[in-house]
Image 1 (cartoon, rainbow, N blue to C red):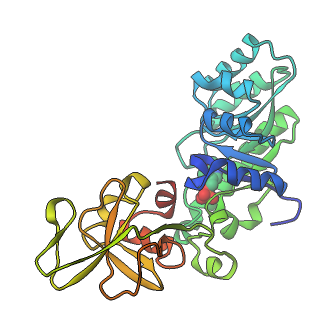
Image 2 (image 1 turned 180 degrees about the vertical axis):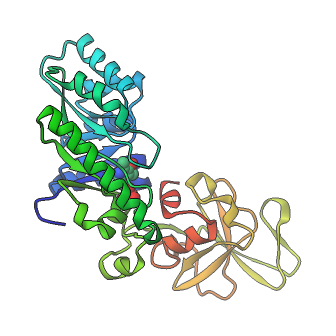
Length: 333
Ligand SMILES: *Cc1c(COP(=O)(O)O)cnc(C)c1O
């Protein structure tokens, strides 16, 4: 990125599961320009904890506009309907100075955003409007992490360029222009515009594995300890439903984490592994709510030893693959 490009960091969903305030505070101390959250309550929590940098709320629902305004959060405005409702709320609250808003353009994701046929009315509402000012205009790419879909990304970026030009020319304004998420930063750096929106990259993951190996470090680690080690004989079973039967004299380590801690129950029955003293131990039997058992028959270890659920080994990518999902879902769980 160019040194002048602003940085918005996405701390939605509890900073991808790693702790909203802790991550937001570190980012604030390092001069981040904007933080992004999904809903108003997340922004409110950050404000109450002492975060003062601008916070954009990506999907504020109508019932949360009061919270948005009371905590000086900046809403993403994605349709004429919500623009009108938000202006109405500002009037109700008798906010006199223009309130910053961020316009989301629909360019191909087909999730939220203004369509081209909204522009005429959008421009009419914003013209000489004293209640709001457009602080940024942005869009979101559907395929930034898929090299085979480059053409679609380029189509979205071009459509975005046109939308931005149409609105800003008509209103004679020059708001912050932004489009790229983490994979977008890697693949479409020439479209960094005035700002980028960094999410998963902060935690050391990228779908662009060459880039990841060269420039990123996995910074998220989920670890626990061994609560107890039991020795069982051939034929004995482990956990609910007796879904694991020992085929030999077996050493079982019990860990104090389970599906309530976000370890998906489907990782049980021998599917997933955890790291103990440089070895991988297989998860045996059914994962419980707050506990799980792993086979440590061939692994030197003792009660109290550290266990890695994911980190260096197994990696977040390993767990993601066992679950057949994406790292976002593993982290936020
Ligand atoms: C979550 C989000 C991002 C960040 O995406 P990553 O792929 O994690 O970088 C960027 N922009 C918007 C609008 C988002 O909702």
